[in-house]
Image (tube, one colour):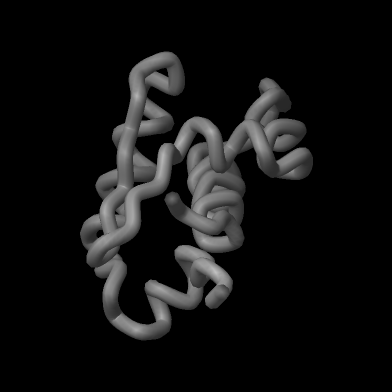
Length: 85
């Protein structure tokens, strides 16, 4: 059985576009309580679940002093390291 690629691998393969990634990050950060699904070819990723599964991203987003750029980077990292369904 083949391993599901990470979103980062799909990004490198150009299956996930930069525009779609940035839109998903922005949408998630606007309201983390709302579901955000990122699609890449046949794969789908729940952005909120990816963030919750990534301890460092959770910790960074919990910091009140984190800048917008820092928060975006934390979500981006969690998404690119996640394996979609």
